[in-house]
Amino acid sequence: MSSEVVDTLINGAKIITMDEKRRIYMDGSIAIKGDQIAGIGKRVDIEKKYTATNNIDGRRFVITPGFINGHIHITGDPLTRNYVPDDIYCSPQEKLTKWVMPRYFAHSAEEERVSAQLAALEMLKAGTTCFLEAGTIRHLDSVVEGLNETGIRGRVGSWVTGRAMNPDEDQNQLNEEGIRTLENEVKRYPARKGNLISAWPILIGHSTNSDEIWQAAKTIADHNGLGISAHMSPYQEDPDWFLKEYGRRPIEHLESIGVLGDNVSLTHVAHIDENELNILARTGTNVIFCPLPALKGAFGVTSVGRYPEMTRAGINMLLGTDGYDIDILHSARIVASLFKDIHQDVRHYPVHETLTMLTCNGAKAMGMQDQIGSLEVGKKADFSCHDTDRSEWRPILSLVSQLIWSADGRGIHSVWVDGIRVIDNYRSTMIDEKELMGRVQECGESVIRKSKIPFVSPWPVIR
Image (cartoon, rainbow, N blue to C red; front, top):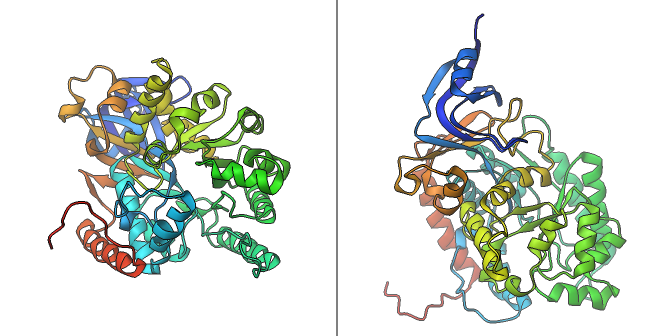
């Protein structure tokens, strides 16, 4: 019996499949044909069934599905990372208007393109193969062009708000403009076969979107098989605003206008009450938790966060990095430890559950569970090879525990997306990293100059 010819065979690796049975092969192989996984299993079985034009010795690797970052600002933050001091004490609204928005609005189309490529490169090199962008892109065409050059998979959206904040603004006109933007972006970048990057009707959220825009986004998503994502309730300001405006809390109001569901993902969701939690569970709405921004931004999650309760209620929860540390394994480690301490119960978010957030839960929220999130025959060949010839991986004893508690993105040797090796031996195969780093420095300095945000340091910086 002749063997089937495939493009690539990786033999002898340790493979965490995240399939339905959560099988882990300690001496496994994976066969890639085109953009899909053709075979996966024990090495002795796969070697009998397949031959390849490209054979890779996988004995030094732990292979995992590509991670999914559920919430990341790929523009605005990467080129200005950590410039704003972490001890600026002011209201969330003041922080947005004085420290955040000027940086976003200072970006040119080219600077957003460079920012997106930097974020994509950093994600890939840390094992993230798919992401959901936060909806703060102002120059979508340039960003999509830049992302396509990196080889990453993702869903993006233009900056859409559309609520009249001043008496002289025309709400009907804002609605028309916002809805037109949502409709146009999903037409220009449809989620069809072969498109790694496509558009969703992503909203800023909070109190920035009118009911009409929320409802239009949900209709567009439902009709096109897409999802919606929005920020909501990181601080008490969101519930306070909705209660004053509508007499209902945010999640209650979104349910009342018919815009929740299993294709909707809400980010942060720190300040919710019991009824809102029950609504999220009943409607199948996904929740994206960004642990580092929550702690750094003092959301109060250690005192009011209901994330373990959400998980127990069956709410699908995934992780995001927001505008901070892009290595999502660091976020996983925070989740795996934070609630153990808060509740003084080590049973909260064990490592196997945490890894599920990065893979299967992320794929479900993105409506892509039939394509990514686990390593199975017929699914996309999106995976990462973790290098165990490193001190943090030795001795190899318990793969999932070591992945969450000891490893991080520094050990990602190679990454495949859609069957293409986009990272090899720690370097991008798609773009010139040296050239990009030069552009990143130039663009970062340019954005800071244009934003006019002052440099603040308690220590003297001598130039």
